[in-house]
Length: 142
Image (tube, rainbow, N blue to C red; front, side):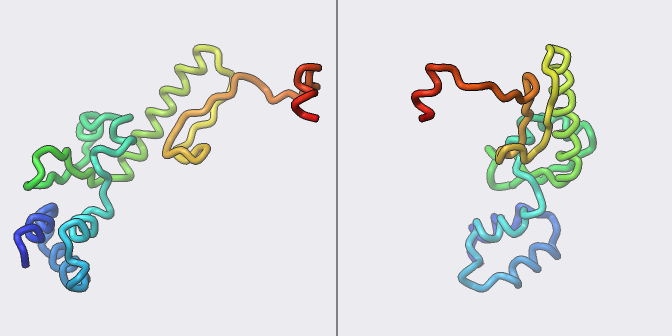
C-alpha cells in the first residue's frame, strides 16, 4: 500500500468502509482517485452547484454533516446528507419562484432536472399563443 492510497482512504473515518473498498477493488483499480471516489459515492461535493445555490453554512446550520479530506486543505469536503441538500434546494427554488411571481411572472415550473439543466427555475411570461407569421417572417419560412 502506497502513501497516496492511504491518504485517499483517509477521506472516511469509517474503518469498515475503508476495508470494504480496498478489498472490493482489484489491484489495478486501487488508484487514489478510484479509492476516494468509492468512499465518497454517496456524498455530495461541497463545490457542487446545488451547495453553492443553497449555501454551505445553511446546510450545516440545518444539521447536515460534512467529511473533510485531511490531506487536501483547499477542498471544502463532502456533504453526507444528500436528502437534506435536496430539500434545501427545493425550498430555495420555491422562495425564488415566489419572488418572481410577486414581480408579475404568471406561471412557474420548478425542478432540478428542468430542461436538461442540473437544476433551474423556469418561468413563463404568458400563455402560449399561436400567431400567424408576418410578411417579413413568411419569406424565411417558405
